[in-house]
Image 1 (tube, rainbow, N blue to C red):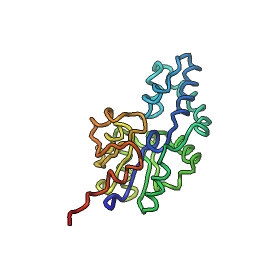
Image 2: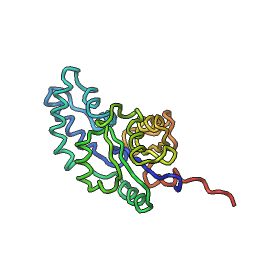
Image 3: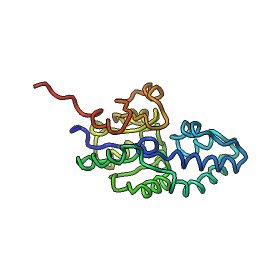
Image 4: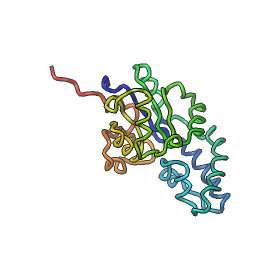
Length: 219
């Protein structure tokens, strides 16, 4: 792990499980607008590209703005009860901090909701920098967020690893020249992720350090 100075994490599906909150909010908004509600699996497969695209997948174009407004109003409260760490996430963050590694977040979630999650989970102190999709012109799958984080923390792409749960995370990492480790705890399965070309695919965050540890040299 000596070659990795910075671990950048996606949020939803990688560190936290907020699907219950997302499902409650989008179904509240869809019902209010006269649309059919979604199953949990439909919600899980719809997230990751940001809230506007989440809504746009399920309503007519002329209803996007109003549905999004209803969703946002509901989501502030939903996040206060419908979010939790994924298994092993908190322990992994603590290990990395104890080892002196820098850590950051790059998420397509809007800033206001990201900070609600971090406050709810008392997680803000784990991160040196947090950057959200509404703060860049081109969110994931573009590499802009990762490039900005690297510049802010003055770390080269070769010294960083990005950890995410979707193919767009891998695409963002590749665009920024950063190795991406995909973890199958979120929206995408291994077969969804592998075509994007991740550095590694793991099933649990406890496998992260081993996935990026340099091979032992022969004596």
